[in-house]
Amino acid sequence: MCGVIEYRAIDNKIELSIGTMKTRGTEQYWGTTWISLDTRQIEYSEMFSGTIQEIEISGLKDKFLVKTIRELRIERIN
Image: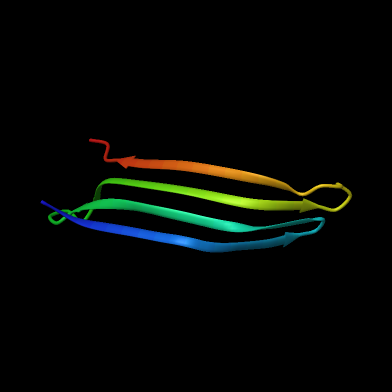
């Protein structure tokens, strides 16, 4: 028997400035985690996320867009 936790966050704003680089954009993520009710250990978890960012670097004429997609799975090792 497992407890199930579902989560999602949509349209999280991202803004970062480090030295000569500035970026801004948005991130979305969602997932599900199954936790054993007996042992309270994670039995399985999966998470999906995506970001879209506009990046500006001093000295470069044009800004550019970056899209990142991630999938993460955690499985219990016996």
